[in-house]
Image 1 (cartoon, protein in one colour):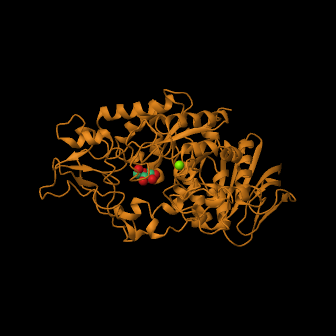
Image 2 (tube, helix red, strand yellow; image 1 turned 90 degrees about the horizontal axis):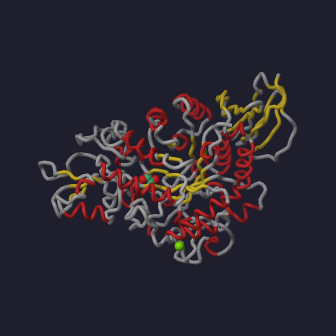
Image 3 (cartoon, rainbow, N blue to C red; image 1 turned 45 degrees about the horizontal axis):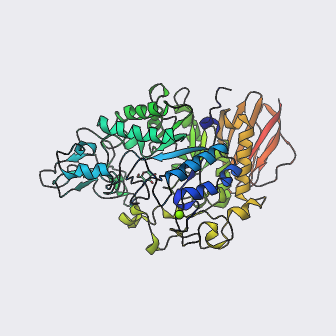
Amino acid sequence: MAETIWWKRGIIYQIYPRSFQDSDDDGIGDLEGIRRRLDHPVWLGVDAIWISPIYPSPMADFGYDVADYCEVDPRFGTLAQFDALIADAHARGLRVILDFVPNHSSDQHPWFRESRSSTTNPKRDWYIWRDPAPDGGPPNNWLSQFGGSAWERDPATGQYYLHSFLKEQPDLNWRNPAVQEAMFQAMRFWLDRGVDGFRVDVIWLLIKDDQFRDNPPNPAWRPDERSVERLLQRYTADRPEVQDVVAAMRAVVDEYPDRVLIGEIYLPIERLVAFYGRDLKGAQLPFNFQLISTAWSAAAIAGLVRDYEAALPPGAWPNWVLGNHDQSRIATRLGGAQARVAAMLLLTLRGTPTLYYGDELGMVDVPIPPDRIQDPWAKNEPGLGLGRDPSRTPMPWDDQPNAGFSSAEPWLPLNPDHAQPNVARLQHDDRSILTLYRRLIDLRRRTPALSVGDVSEIRAIGNVLCFDRAEGAVRVLVFLNLGHEPADLPLPPDVRRARLVISTVRGGDGPDFTDRVTLRPDEGLACEVVDHG
Ligand code: GLC
Ligand code: MG
């Protein structure tokens, strides 16, 4: 089968390394901890782990502020431990994807220290420096994603530097070929060590307007939204020239066999799909976050799936994401019953699924006491709630103290609810969401119709989202009841008999469906067509 390259057929599992497993009793997860817990992703049946940043960092943004692109932060371990993790993962059939953070470095990176030292330093142009506006203020109106101006005045030279995020995260100048070359070398450093690809942080922000024009106001902005949304990001995001940078990164990845380039992109569908690149020489998987922002209704999601499928360039491979370390957890957004339906949606749609660690346990956002808030964005914009910490809390493994995550006080609190689910307990519970995830993954793996097959007949019937997946002679019908009432609908006219293969609420066997399908409240089910009309 042509479509069996691992990142198309496979499932990606995101690990936030601070919160997966601590091995050295400092309350912070680390690489050796991940290595010791590889049983879990292997047991779950995923194909690849993506690890959020592990580079040396002052941790102003928990690793998304990189002080050295070719090392490991001592809190996470050593390069030797990284190599051991890759070797063990590969020996167990797991790929390893690294987070790569090219838009900005830490202000502690030696490049930036040099850059800020004088206007004539050879590294000056590695970052984005501008003279003040005539009134001495920032050069233009651009805003930081984390609140406030995107410009910081540096007293040493009186110029401003650009930071799309924290002021501790100065933006690199991707129009400078020397920057590009240095970053590509860093990618090769990890590719040579055996990483299977990169998830590239904020790839759609890498290039900014070369004329530094003011962004226009956003008439739709509401005060309960992030302040960066006050302006349309016309001149700071999705600039045409970014496509050349993405293509150049892809070329680096393509110097090695079987690697994947994934891009973090928060854009509407029609702009998102541009990141597959001309002749599909951009990102192989431009992350599709539409399930995070779309209303949870059968009609809205059916429309989304159809629009996305229709927008894909010929030959482009789709992908779907339900959650990540920047978003409220799916079980909090939808509640426990619909979180199971969401799992089934993610694992039956056409396109590579990415799971966020802990979502397979039904983990919820953990309320963080105000004095324990860590997220710098939450500290900058306190009016907007607790920020991103609630979805970054430690993985609960078992009934030991701190749920087996660490013998020390964890960097973020565990769910204080002692009945909180943990891996050990849920693994032995036939009805748990974890068991459901594992069964769905297993089903997807052994059913080409689900992993690589076509999708068709995407529609909403009342609260039920329906679609067909097919490969060769095998046809699987998926019915997802997004409502809390029972539902009853006809089988497609050309189907006489269908056999239940999985349900989010009932056991695996039951009588075949003939004529009609009856769904319980909050039930998702898949059945295989056994008799065509
Ligand atoms: C991405 C990351 C987020 C980080 C930001 C700045 O959006 O996912 O966690 O804060 O980039 O690097
Ligand atoms: Mg540790």
